Structure formats: structure tokens, C-alpha cells
Image 1 (cartoon, helix red, strand yellow):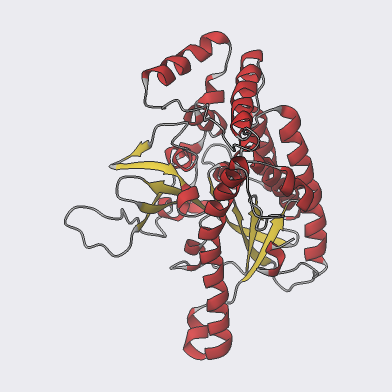
Image 2 (tube, helix red, strand yellow):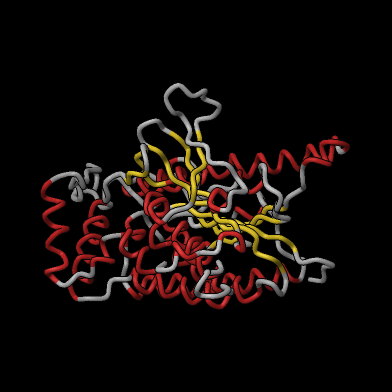
Length: 387
């Protein structure tokens, strides 16, 4: 692709548990072309997508003592993080087999009667859950395997040493505040002081929106990946946070509001398939499709509004065009065969073989997609969201 100036690109990474290993492969390919064909000005993510976005951003971010970041460093850190995420020790392998196996068993049901019983119903606030978690290190499981905050601290040891004034790439992390029901974005531009924080609904304050923008923190990223059936709500300040799947998957609106650097293109690395082969009928398929729709429909509202603004620019021009920018939205997605085969339970499969298979497909799909984009043949949203 020949441009006078490289396209400014922001990439949004959907959440989807271990299915996000596909995004790892895509991003490692994208980073090979960064600066050559385009400029990566933004990243966003929710849940496992937040982990991907954070690690790429952290690798690109300059450190006061550690020097300038780079695309090569970002790719290395992303791969190393997901290597830590996989089950390694014998205890972790057995734990993964039990967890994934139990969830897979939940998806089966008695023929004709259509009955299946929930197996993993342990409350993360309860004594049994806490006792089991406390015993895991003594049984041979790494703390980082079951403690997301410990894993993030190990992966980002220089987070407090980031040179915020020199950070060029913005990152948005999506989460859901539980008590007041606030759509929440942890935004690196708040750390840079180029965006003001908005703590949402507070006593005696006027409520403008049921959403808030807070500074980026490793706790915020952990909040984005907090499924209430597996982790207690993450407390940050006066708020309690769950997975961002319930609000934005991933957040993209803030890339285009009140900021000087607006992307020319927005690329969504889609984990949840837009379509299904047929209506789900079994309880397992219904659960799977519910989870996918929850993660897709909130995203579509934001993407569809971007397309609406594009139409307004074309139709009205003038001052409206002076204050808004036409943005191209594109989708990068896994093959239909893989999307059809994956299930809700496999989002929790942390086995090496499964992760490597999805990561390999992500690299292959990402390279083919970039070649198509470089040749001006890449399709656009909403057409490219379908199979």
C-alpha cells in the first residue's frame, strides 16, 4: 500500500478466555508491519483481549530507565505472557483437565430429557474456594497460574517506570463497575493527563453518563478479566469491578472523542463469531451462544455508530466534517471451521496444544489479512464480520 503518510490504526481485541490466543497470533504478525505500512496509535481490549492489548502496549511504551519500547519487544512480551498463562506443572495440568473437563461435562445433557447439572458452582467468596486456592502453591501450582494480579505484576515489572510523556500509543481497557452499574474504561491518556478522569456517579455529583474513565493500572486490567464465578470483584478506589464483557467488548468509543490523535482505521480482532450454523438447541449450545452475543452486541452498537457518523460526514460536510473524521472499520476473524468448533468450555482450556493451535491460526490469518490490506483488497465492516 502506497501512502503519503502511514495510516493511523487502532486495534480492538475482543475477550474470550483462551480463545484470545488467536489474537496473540494476529498481533505478533501486525507488529512485524508496524511503522512500515501503518502507525499503531491505539489498542483496546476486554478480559483476555485486555491482556493482549496491555502486553503489546507495555512493550511499545518507553521506560524511564529501560529505554524506548519497540514492536519487537512488544511481540516478545506478548508471547512470553501467554506462555506463562498456559498450564505447565503437573498440578496445573491436572487442575486444567478438571476445570475444562467439568465445564465440558456441563455442556452435555441426558438425551431426550435435556437435563444437565452444573458442576462448577463454587463461590469465590466462600471458605471452600479460598482454602483450595491457598493450598495450590503447596501442591505445585505457580501463584501466577491462578492469581491474575501476580501474573500481571511479573509480566510488567517496570509499569511504575513508564515515561508517560513519551508514550505514543493509547490503550483502553474495558471493565464493569458492579455496585453502580458503570461502564468503565481504564485509559492511558488519563495517566498522560491528556484526558480527564471521570469517576462516574459519586455522591452529590451531577450524573452525566452511566460510564466512567479512570487511569490505567494493572488492577484495572485484572478487573477487566474478573469473571464473578472465578474471582472476587476487584476493588479499585470506591468501586468494585467485574469483566468488561458486560459493557464493552472491547471499548472503542473513546478513540474518537475529545482526543487529538484520531485513528484513520479501526481493526477489530474478533473472537466471538458473528453467526452460527443453526439455532442453538442444547443447553450447552445455548450457553455458548448467549456468551458470544453478550460479547458482540455491545460492540456492534459502538461500531454501527461510527458508521453513522461516517454517513453524516458524507451527507452534511461543512462544519460537521471539520469536527469529525471518517473512520474505516475492519474485522480480523478466525476461520469459520475453527469458530464453529469452539465452545464456551474451551475458553477455559489452558493446555499447551490448544493455545498453540489457536496462536498458529492467528499468525496465518493475520499474515494473509495484512497482505490483503497492503494490496487494498481488505473488506470493511459490517460485511467482513460475516462468514
